[in-house]
Length: 129
Image 1 (tube, rainbow, N blue to C red):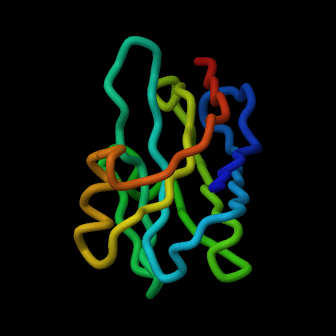
Image 2 (cartoon, one colour):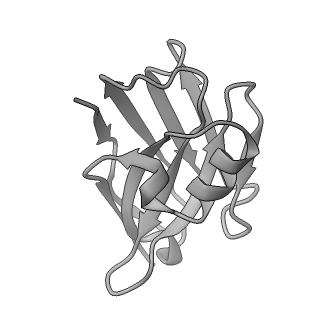
């Protein structure tokens, strides 16, 4: 059974920082992409950042230059460093793990195509102005 467990969310002031973590267990797809997406209340989910097995990263335009995705322990732990947060970043953030290889994995996670990924319950990030 695949489990993705996120932590590190919380409430911060605008301009602040948070670091999210995601630990996975039972994920059998070594060498596949992993990433983060977010969903604010009443809105569609938005892909935030994806990292492929070679370490290449892709970011949404809205977070480019402010967020940084990384991983450690092979692909056991995934991080999202979020700096210069704004109220527009308020959302529940979910860790995602792809089930297909290659560039298609990155594209599908950025589009939050749930058929091609596992995802966790999420951690809430709230940014006050």
